[in-house]
Length: 171
Image (cartoon, rainbow, N blue to C red; front, top):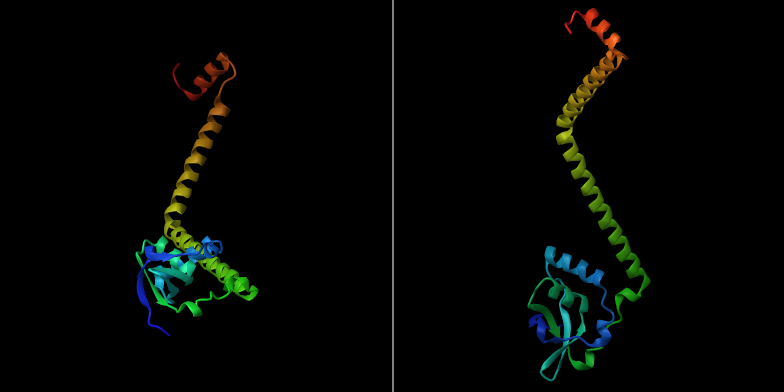
């Protein structure tokens, strides 16, 4: 197998037929993987005069473009061997595996978010508990004040005067 080389992305021509098979979700997954571990498999190109024509690796190429790369690793294959392989996504077992991995990733992200939320809640738990107790105390005091005011609110002027005399306050 030929040794991978670095090719300028702008020099690679993508046939229209291949562009139709582009899946943005796959490009995003590959780009994320490339950020973590780099490009693991080179693309395949063939020479057509003075330009390079993509044979295999559309999603890797698009992922590199999305990441702002100007070059990509690839191998030049002879034109007679440049028949594109059938897309793996067309096989049901590959699609099932992709869906499984997406579900596992989603579950992992949900678990991490729940753990972060729990840790934040525990860290703020003591503060929140003391705030809740003080807020409850304020509410209870306010209710008691309202209760006293409601009980002591006279219905008439004469009732108010009698109340004032009873409490020893001057009017």
